[in-house]
Length: 88
Image (cartoon, rainbow, N blue to C red; front, side, top):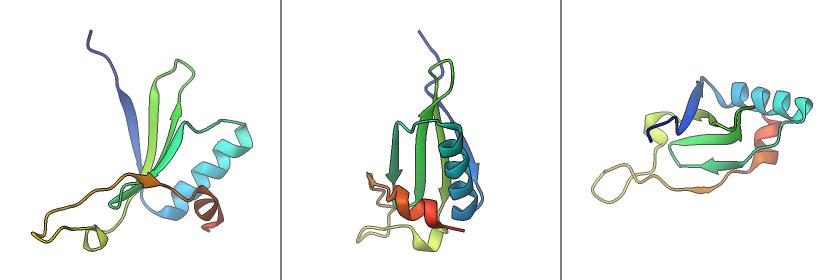
């Protein structure tokens, strides 16, 4: 069947995403994961119905990783969540 894979919410800055993370912490909401994709930093969690939710911010395009041909070279690394929590 076709269904919702996940909902993604774009935050304008790393500080705004860090604020969302601190609010999740305060509410006792656990993350399913956190990734650094090179082009963005993302937090993953579930809503009360079990649907996937992604909270993320995009790095400026001039900071995106690129390969030798100049194409975007996304990655999937672990995000340093403690460093994000410290962003003001």
